[in-house]
Length: 246
Image (tube, rainbow, N blue to C red; front, side, top):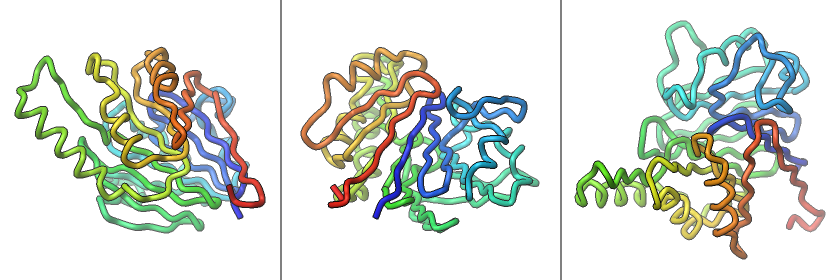
């Protein structure tokens, strides 16, 4: 039986997922201890964390658009844990995962998958749901700067990292777009849709260009995958399975 679930967009590649008494925070590069208002305003604060039985911060890699060390301002709360796709900074208590690692915390099961940039991507099972956060896993094809050979190698590397996910049942996938790559800004996301077929995809990493996420959602919905573009910090979606499990 699955618990009700809510996914809230924070900023850029940041999301907060609430299910089964747990709060899962992915790639929150905006956390600041002084902020107030909670995820309805698109950021995480101490008052919010205190409402949950457990809190896990996930950081796919250390780029500053995915990671802010201010998340460790909550480390004094015994219910808070940190899972990083890179070695923990000096003096910080956190679990560090590499591709292929498995970890369980507070009844949440976590598997680290690969990336085509730094760090990892995360497959998380919580509250009866399976959630995938891609981090910077994408087909990075800088066509104006790269040779044909480099582009082909990037595509091959991307396909290799996606392959282990094919056949996995994924309820929600957060996956990057990047308008900086030009017309084929969504090539990686389209491939992921075709091969992995998550039930719901949420575009991320669109660098303030909400129209890119909205256009991607409009053009790529299919009978296999619903695409929901959350474009305003604090915007959320809710999900609940019916008794049949559908």
